[in-house]
Image (cartoon, rainbow, N blue to C red; front, top):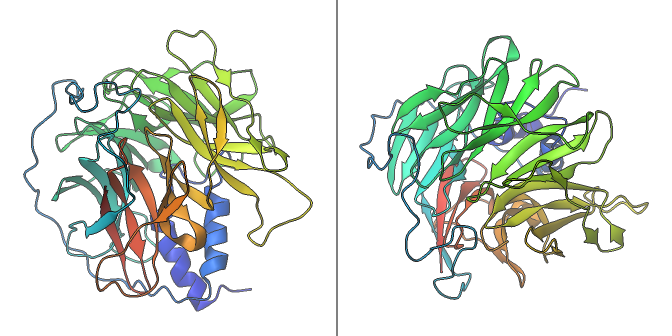
Length: 417
């Protein structure tokens, strides 16, 4: 059966909004999320169009990087990056700003630093059904465009010094990891297919190496760490010989978070943690959710000692969206896991253990200790309030993501108090 016109438009949009540079991974649920989004949106025509895309002249960005891409010491308002200090009560009152773009009005934020000063993202491909993306770095309201070789380019993270990391797909389906330092594109060392997903203020980078091309069924992925963008990647120790997956984030104290499973097939996703000085990784217990123990846990982020993610529980009674999903945070100091209140599908966490992302009905929002807050749209925004969140500052004040309606997709920054 051929796909309907509505679905073709939606699939074209979600392809560049959601695809990881490494392609679909067996150890994450992005494919299931995208399919759920397609089903829920096939009632709407997402006529994004194929506008001509211009080339942005390089904007002059502040030079804040040292020679090794390490950040300056954290500001006095946040003396301990492992546990942010609130600067005042968070009221959940947010304003939204459309971020500047090249000539084409379509783009999305894909990551941000812990203070929210730097945001990274990408613009839409220049032609329909293409996967060559221009990459963007915002410092405040100034934007710079950078180009990575290959296709499916994506910057996944950036530290307080503006050192960004990401990946692209090269010839033969091999993944290539990159760093961007003050506008300079630097290939990360690694003879195998490697991808970079996270970086901390010390300049340590985490990701994975792939055994095979990204589209090969069952291609195994193993978590790796680079001590700096000049260093060779080092395999992280596995919980056991059959385990596989990715390192998805690194905290300021050097703790690394992974999303892994014990071998191929239908083995459940688990959160794995490598603590500084430990000789073996720690597989975190599956959290307790309403009705019992979760069946799997998808690690999303690690900040300030908080692991945030999505727990799922298999039951005989299937809800309307097909899954029982719960936003969960785990305090690595105590091991306590809390189920937060709210309907949450995907996003990221911050240094308070809150989650920001795509909540009920595709609306971007924040889930705090006490409940959820929907994020606003700009004045005059046309269509429904749809979108997602991909960066969340440690103090909860700066949120990066995108908004989409029937005829536009725009990168946005929410500023909250």
